[in-house]
Each structure stands twice: as structure tokens, then as C-alpha cells.
Image (cartoon, rainbow, N blue to C red; front, side):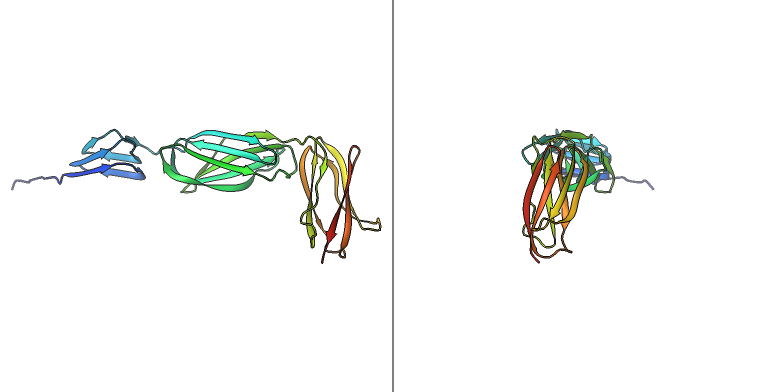
Amino acid sequence: MKQSNFFLLLYFTITSMVLAQSSMVYEIGTTVDVTTGADICADNVSIQGTYTGTGTLCNGPLPVELSLFTATLAKNEISLYWKTETEVDNFGFDVERRINGGDWNKVTFIQGHGNSNSPKEYSYNDKDLFAGGSKFQYRLKQIDTDGNFDYSDIIEVEVVPDQYELSQNYPNPFNPSTTINFSLPKQTQLKIRIYNMLGEQVATIAEGMYEAGYHKVSFNASNLPSGTYIYRLESSEYVKVKKMILLK
């Protein structure tokens, strides 16, 4: 008995999408027309039929190619900007920060574009400069959809105030906690003390050597009665006093 073979002829056109998966196989008799701007991308692409068109056939996944990562200092914030040229399975980016060589901490997450063969732009504005230091370093933790990740290079911005400053506490009035910001143009030995309206000291909330930069301290007045209080920053070169109101 003579065996007869025949093939089903298939034809389809890919016009705009990026196909990214672990394996793609197009059997004998398949005609694949990939138009300009479209891509077929996978870990393993096998086209046994006819491949036509000016689109791209890439055997192996595109990387998440980071082409730019910058940071600029504005008046009250640090603006981060980065750009990718291509992305495959990009879940997104953790933006991580450390100050004066301390520990890395995640400050936000930015969603990725998944799969893309065109440039994508991202940005984030870090407005929390009162974090205690002057050397702000950033890196991106790029996370794939399967949980794998990789880190970008580290970029650094130096943030040094041009003068001493003690800010008004916030919130004010408060109950029972409030935050006090202060800035230092250079490393400074200082104290911040709290007084009642009789001039009696009721608390010391900061004492010691502080690096140049923007700082914040918290004050919890849960053990004090309602009323007006004075807080005083004192150093060898700068003294400043402000009032705050505790309302219970």
C-alpha cells in the first residue's frame, strides 16, 4: 500500500504586534507575512514554511535595554528620568534610594510596558529631600513578569542647602505628633529642645552631629497637656525659635 502525504496550506499576516513567548512553531506549508514594524520574538522560533515581509524575526527574547538613566535637582525635588529601547516581559521598576551610603530603600514602583520594540520613557519626582543627608543615590530594580530582576547603574545627586533653616512644624495645630524640618549647609553639632510657655524644658528631640542636608524629626506630645509650646534649634552658628500648638 502506497502512503500519500499532503499538507494544509496556511497563510496569515502579522502587522503590528510583538509576539513574545517561550516557543513558536510554524509548520510546513505555513506562509508568514510580517509587515514593516511588526516582530516575531520568542525563545525559540521555528518557521518551516515561507517567511515574507520586512518585519523582524528574532530568535531569542529581546532584553529590557535601558538606554538612559538621569537625575536632576530642582528647587524642592529630584527628578528621575529613564528610557528603554526594547522590553520583553517587563513587569516594571522599583525605584530604590540610599542616602550618604546608608541602606537601599524602595521609594516607589513604576509599571513597565510588558513587551515592546519601541522606545519607552519613564519618570519619577522624589519630593522627600528631608531624609537626613546630602548624597542621594538611586538605582532601578527592573523586574520581569516571572519575578527575575536586574539592577541598573547607580546615579548620584548631591543636595546641599545654601543656608540654615528651621521650618514650621506640620501639622500645626497637632495631636499628638508633629514633624519638624530643618536644613544645614554643612555638618553641624546641634540641639532641638521643646519648652512650655513658662520657659520650662519638656523634651529634647534632636541632639548631636548632623550631616549637611535636609533633615526631619518627629515630636510626640501624648504626655503633655494642650497648649502653646516653643521649639528651639541651637548650634554654634545658628539659633532659631518657633511656636507650635498642641490641641487635644
